[in-house]
Image (cartoon, rainbow, N blue to C red; front, top):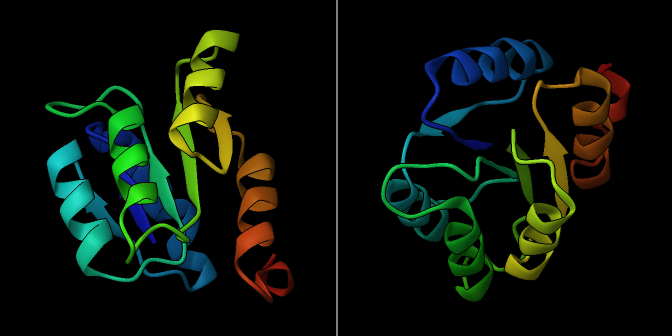
Length: 123
């Protein structure tokens, strides 16, 4: 699992949420690193913030979805941007699920169950 967020608080929260479920977590705190990691390593799911240093999350998502190695990787946007316009931009960039902060654990788990077979038995 790749979590892309420049907030150490969100990184820590995602770590505390996912690791107890047996999910290995890798972190990136900017768009360029996220693109590199997504295109060179396999991730079951990528959690992606919109507001990032360098390349924003919409462009990161579009590049992930446009690359042959990562185009099938589910991208879940996890961001504080919650307007209809932002959600449409996320969909246009290729996001699979658009979640807003503050993190709702039940929505996060529902999204994970959609993409990780058998994970529902861990909750």
